[in-house]
Image (cartoon, rainbow, N blue to C red):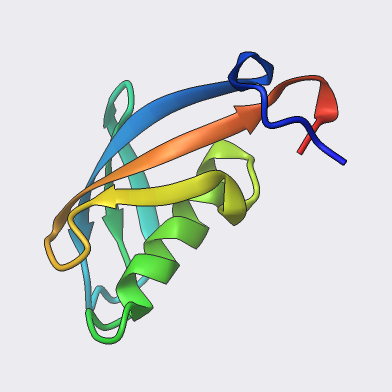
Length: 90
């Protein structure tokens, strides 16, 4: 079992500008913690949000479950919270 102690995890906010209906999936870092993400997914029923979460997780080398959408569920401008657990705890 993992600990829920906040001292065991690092959190940071990551801003995203989304481009749905793109010809291909692509992630570009514009500045630290600010990315532009192109996804082939449509912005309907959360499909683009899930695609963006998956693409961002892949780019950052973390599991998609480490990213939580905090702002912008229906907007092209989004904020995800990245939570990385220290010492392999989850």
